[in-house]
Length: 625
Image (cartoon, rainbow, N blue to C red; front, top):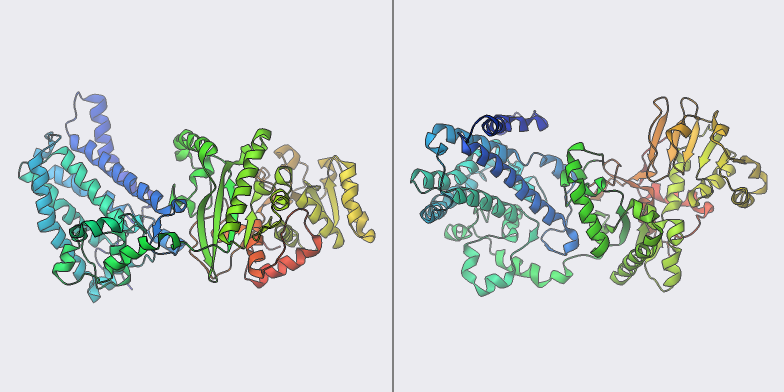
């Protein structure tokens, strides 16, 4: 269906280049700053500052809305999915539009070059009167008109396509709607200025206050306590709430107001359940959250990846992590926050999704990569992991799976430390490495006769070596310890022990095109691999792809089943809908209802069983030979 006039944004095909339209304003400011004694057009500075503050306002609300660990009163329990995030990607179009309209207004009215006073009481009174008497009823009726069949179908349905309210949803609308909204916000400001009572604080206060209220109303978290309305009932008609506006999205024939429910009451469109639902959310606050069936206990990888989380930037979190140079200025601030978390923070809820009626959550241990290799930090990290396991046990979680370094053998024996200390645990502790091993061995093509394995005596390396030798695949096991090699070799069936070969140098694999990296391999060490080699890996962090004539696999991972719901963030560098194999392994453990802990050494006999169970439940391999 062809788009109707003014439904599409004029710059929707420009992508990030749309921000170049701020260029003339920025150039004017720079020119005045460098070559002139005073600004000839001070409004250029104010427009740029206001636009930046508006973006920051929405980002703050985004952060608050996604801080699941605060235990806020969430209105809808669903998660925001990738589709909604993509649809709302350009949520800030309206800021650019209104910045351009403000520029046009300043050019049309030369008096705007004059400096406004900081404060003008008369201006504030005039502005509030214009807002209540003009903007509120104007928005109300325009909003009702947009719910007519034609306007809703071609214009307003875009805004209602967001299934879970979010502060960015406030900006997700068509060009025509935001033109009208610009008029709604512009009338009180221009009216006060033309009456000669404008002030700088009035403009800043009204614009930012308008955005604050819009963000609050579209938040999925209730922020106004019901007790306030119970003590001061008249406030119910003067200020709307997130719950009030959420009812408009579920019952679209009600609650049309801008910010004041008074106008819904006047014209008989006020939803009768508005106050009851608002009180109910606070009344059952303690029961507002469901108990998860499964928890994946992750950790922070490094400082840059700490900015790749929904409550920092939802858009970046929805795509695989990569280092973005423009974020480098925020690196020192992030580091300081992480150090503060090291001192005071507890394990916190990061993200969640739903699978077949079950709630799956990811919790974060507030420690990042290098801290796991500091000897003096081990006890503190183990304490955090133990506390998380005990918390999950008290809550009634069925399975908790340990990610990457949280199950390091040198740290806690792959989870055995906490399980041995608390033998009465009802929650099943799982390292998920059985499925990790299954993913790696099933990535290897059937015709491969020889592989080169680094990290060969680690927990995963041992299991992979024993499994492959049973398939009559020759495994070159790189290790400096003859004793550890022989111990693993003795575990293999007698007729397959000769398929395990002890090597101590990378040169031994110069004719082998299948490398499995379980230990960091430097670019120089990679140079011994022949052209066309594929590097499988289970080492954290992943090895550097230094050879253009070779291919590199990602960390062992699996694609979640297609019926997953509420998933809106990527797991580190993995693509959308893909999770690390240890995450998937814990989920499979829960889905199967296995009663045992999965800790310590990997049971090689269970590798095929776990793999088949994962496929049965709809998990799919990312890489297929």
